[in-house]
Length: 438
Ligand code: ATP
Ligand code: MG
Image 1 (cartoon, rainbow, N blue to C red):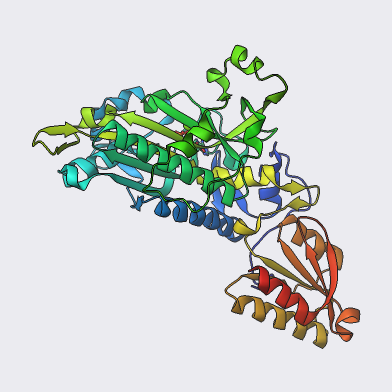
Image 2 (image 1 turned 60 degrees about the vertical axis):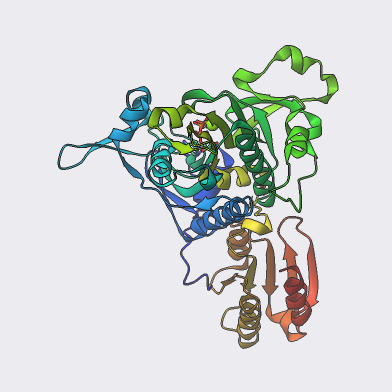
């Protein structure tokens, strides 16, 4: 992609409306623009990152056996009356009337809709277990939308819902999601710690919030320091018993806000980490709350009707983009982890119009693209300083600088954004070094 044809309206100055670094950098790098309070446009650079985050979420959900669907964003109020939540949900729910004066709403969550899908289509214990998920926009009319994507009103969420015959099986489904979450967040460069959580208006008994430690986090969190470097499960067999992994990840002290027990935390002494945290995901064991309310039953092995056991599991996909920036930036801008970067390689042409420079840049660009990897080629007629600053601001993980002096000797400079390490290499070695990392 040539930067001259791309659309990333970067800003030199810090926008005054942004209070936290992720919001500031997303605006400055030209990733997003606000449309209305808590509602954003995702411009090409932002969208590329959002899609990368969603892809990781999707791959790990699929690996854990969840099935992707898409449910409507606009829902009928009838189902919510049936579950009893229409009145309970309060002002966070955006209520709409259609032209026939029917009550509709923009979904803040989808337990009702998914339970309706289940009850009308699945009838036997042989259909179980099932885990259905979507990656879709939600609307919650938050009292105080703030911090950009961190607390938006419209935001992208992955929401999964599990259906099982009995508690043991429901617990396994819950464990599958816990393990998938550990892997998902780690792949996007986040260390998210599962912390005991309140279940709130969603209901149920067992619940964990996945929290990323960050100074700008909205909640106060406390955990054992062993969570900071616990190894992430690999080569997981999701059909096998996962309880030892979940036990290992949930037995040490970790709690946010209301669940925090100062007495228990104090026992940890020097092992206690107390910090601020961002909630990037949430898992709930729901039991039969919705299956009872909406009559989601299957015929059991003995021929009797059984209400199904449910769980629900959310990931704030758009919030993750902001959380990644909070966790990974420096004074020059964003430092994307390779896995979510909008472009893997940036090419900076120091003398656009110089035949040797132009040809070298195009050669590198095409070689990288051929590897199935996206490169952003800064072919603008701009000062070198502006180009360096923009590439760093946008956080491109590898940068190749092509200038007339170097290229006369066949040499370019390769820079790693995260460390700032620079190396002078022949054009061919730079390309093959990068290719080896793809
Ligand atoms: P919070 O406590 O932050 O208000 P929640 O507990 O109400 O979130 P859940 O219902 O658990 O949210 O939603 C699942 C996930 O969706 C959350 O873990 C969070 O990552 C994300 N999320 C929730 N509300 C917002 C929001 N207003 N903006 C962006 N992401 C959100
Ligand atoms: Mg939550």
